Length: 141
Image (cartoon, rainbow, N blue to C red; front, side, top):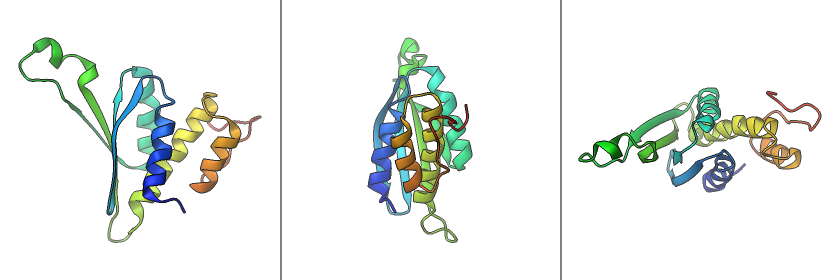
């Protein structure tokens, strides 16, 4: 099983394969995993939202724009997107499991988009108990 830090590092690598996505920070607190990112190309938002929904994890959005400047308040470069997973009483390892499931959805998407090769995709899917892909039949084409 992957550690939380290893999983977050892999997710960071995957997310940054999406156009315009950059990671601002990651956090692995006990029972709580978080990724904060900037998304500067709108076409990358869809795959992330789909993966968040598939993994049933939290997705938050806020702006870091200063309150004084109207121009800056409408600048999407100030938006921050947060993906969060938490443990629960009945799922003490739920945060890690859910974040890895988020990764499974990202792998399937990136492989189908030809942004991740089959060998690397299946290495991650094996680690995260996801359905493997093949080069002849990528998942979610």
